[in-house]
Picture 1 (spheres, rainbow, N blue to C red):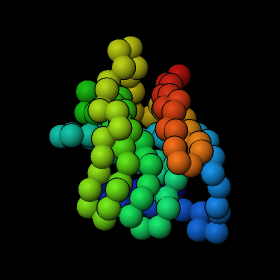
Picture 2 (cartoon, one colour; picture 1 turned 90 degrees about the vertical axis):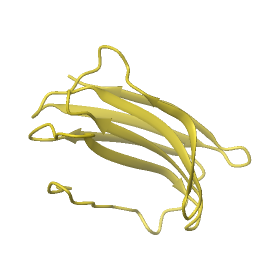
Picture 3 (spheres, helix red, strand yellow; picture 1 turned 180 degrees about the horizontal axis):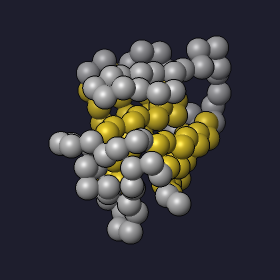
Picture 4 (spheres, helix red, strand yellow; picture 1 turned 180 degrees about the vertical axis):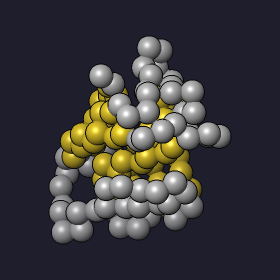
Length: 120
């Protein structure tokens, strides 16, 4: 996928149903943005329109990469499962790639785990 500045794009596998998800995504950008940075959300599980488990990656204007885990519990209420953290030593440069892995397993309870992020 390619998104232009200020644009929001989404891609979903509509006909897939799974208890366990293991997502690995590689992100790249041709330049760092100003302000709050570039946000990418990975949805590990969506159950209807009012329940999902997600991770958010924010590539900040400084090149730092911040990560958080959350759950959407209703159409407008996001519960933070793990607040945004900026791992030391993890940085991003325009033209490089950042790879994110996010796992969601089980139901009742659902476990959100292994949010990892690496750069070359």
